[in-house]
Length: 80
Ligand code: FES
Image (tube, rainbow, N blue to C red; front, side, top):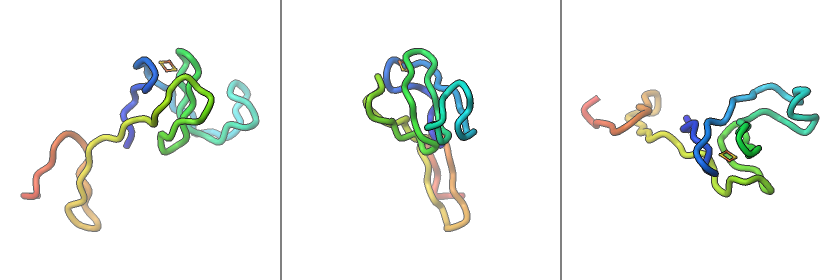
């Protein structure tokens, strides 16, 4: 789960999971678009080259307790 804060200057990127929407163009394959200065990230939050942001969206902290139990958010406890 990514944290919705653009790594350029901190705006909130919009989630656009659709492919080739009219406003983002034929090359868009889904992801996050920052309306402030146009940074683009893929569905995993990885930044595209040639946009203002220079790094990927940050990931929320997570911890796998077991193969079927993952805790997402701040901090975790092994006591689960
Ligand atoms: S704050 Fe997102 S592109 Fe500038």
